[in-house]
Length: 339
Image 1: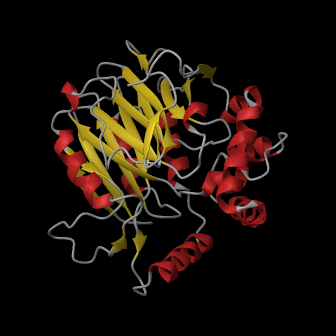
Image 2 (image 1 turned 120 degrees about the vertical axis):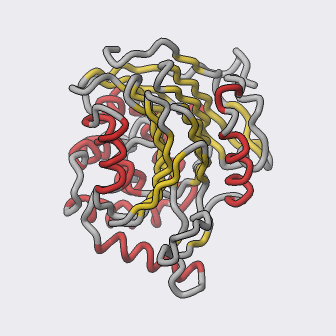
């Protein structure tokens, strides 16, 4: 699906260094990420979002705010605070028998080629993630021998029945909370959880600043989708999938309704559930990707197996009404917790 004329995805070993070090190694990528944000929302809007995000993070429960401040101080780093608490992406994720696959959809353009894979040391073992310089949370990661996990954006909670008004209500709820952002929690899990069970407990029980969807697989074949509200959770064991809406589940009458996000979330969920049963047989070159799982907003595709220690990554970029490879396929294999 990708060819050798496309750029290779860099793999950066950060050891025990924090993610502001990655930004310092590639300040031009941080500047391009911030510029892509300005292209999406305009400079003045980004400035307001950045100011509000900085104030919110100053009172928020997260160990990573200092990293964001240091990245924002780099040349071209204006807008980094807003980026790091925005969840304006949509995704499709599948889990089965220790394997995880995810497609990340993000409205920022020109980001597929900026994709970077990083390796990290932690007391509980080494782990890898697919990320962008300037972002300090975790969206998709692999801890060989422990677990693999990904974050998806949840739907907008239905409150008034008018989507735009409900979006504003959701922003107000987030503004009032000081709990940890979901992508920061996921990073904390990779840094501290020794196994699937501890990761599941943290992702299920830790209070959050906003709802979230997590996909989690374990080295003993576990697979789980975790649907989160701020202080409650629903669990769906694999093989299964998630996109960007709350699936109808029996026995959950008090679960809020929601406005689906992204392009054809029900269609992506339907097709992802079909693919979930066959994750082991899907080719690593991603030739199986089809609409609507692959769409014009797709920026990243990952296949991870925490038992085999494989991490396969592809950057994507919009071309017309779909997305095409923006990088070569990166296939890491034989990864171990000791590095």
